[in-house]
Length: 56
Image 1 (cartoon, rainbow, N blue to C red):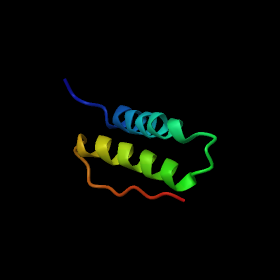
Image 2: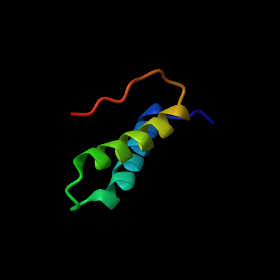
Image 3: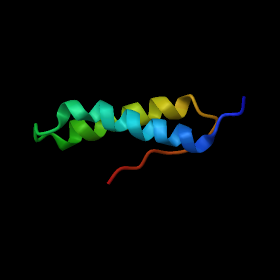
Image 4: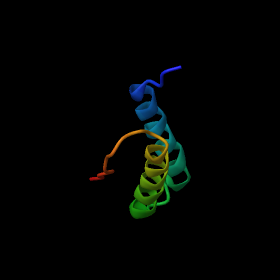
């Protein structure tokens, strides 16, 4: 079964959102960004791509 790259990006975005949720309302933007980036990088490791996570 062929993997659909678009769905992998959706999963990466979802993982980033869920991982940064614990920082919502705490005023620590850097921790929220780090949590989101870590989750997204983890999902990218599972994908057959070469990319870079950029925030800002």
